[in-house]
Length: 293
Image: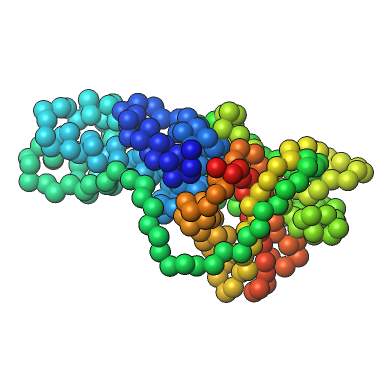
């Protein structure tokens, strides 16, 4: 199954279960990816989070139901996952600009958020700088964090983890343990563990490990071998986070829909040159685990 087919399956799953509790990990399994990885790519491609999509679709359907049926506000609120009429009324008013109790008049205009449909649109022939890397398993020295199953994982949470690691000296320790002769050079690496069978999601910051003391709070973990599509990007004047998001979007909207390679289970890597992150011309890489179709 290719990525676009998997994405449509995930959207169809959401639409079929809008009146039931939705688990983010189960949605992601429709694409055979982890909850974090799916949420990240969904947000980058669509411009809004998975949670925002679900919320908007539920409130759209709730508005239609109140307008066209005799359903009570409390029944519609419970049907679309709200614990009380009060919480539903607040969310409804934010979205539609009117309280649900006023919809019955039939003269109030409501907003509509349409269902997503995945289509391949070929635009622009932009160049992408990538290569395929194949490696045996290797060990890494890591500082890890865990996100619980079913939760909405947001970009700021990952940024906060990096900020914490900068503040507590983690990145300084890792900078001193980089190996210029390794396949990753002197990069500090963000590690995304993309395992759809695990409910929780682990994210880590680390470097290749070749022995020696393991500092307190760190762990050594074996990274399975495999193949990666490695994409290279050079930061210009914009913040690195903007360059980073743009590259992820290009990978999933341009590379995978037309490539013989597709995303695979496994570990995705983000390579950051350890001492130049704020400089113009700074180069970083994204390594996505891949398989041939």
